[in-house]
Image (cartoon, rainbow, N blue to C red; front, top):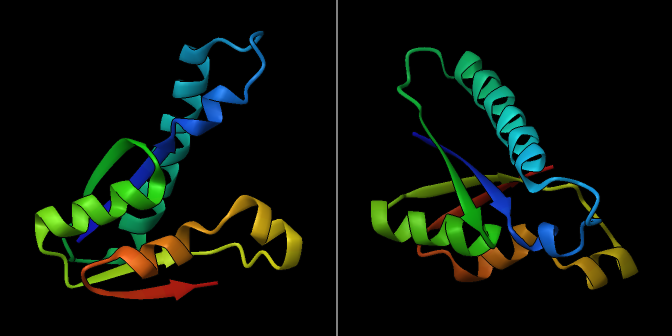
Length: 107
């Protein structure tokens, strides 16, 4: 099983110039490690390979699925609706449209 955390490089273009990029990467990596620890605690005896990637989240997940011949992608969603979803887009929806395999979306 792979657990993937994608740092969306698009967030850096909208950040204030007052925030050092190195600090932001450390925050993202700390968040990823917390998420990985939680996933591993739930996985039991299942081997979990973790990785942090940078780029557009949906594209990176789909690239990994293709490269590793993944059978199933499980992704969480925040369940945005209406205008907020339209303006921000949906990573889960983009993965559903682009993935080479089945996708399970968990809210």
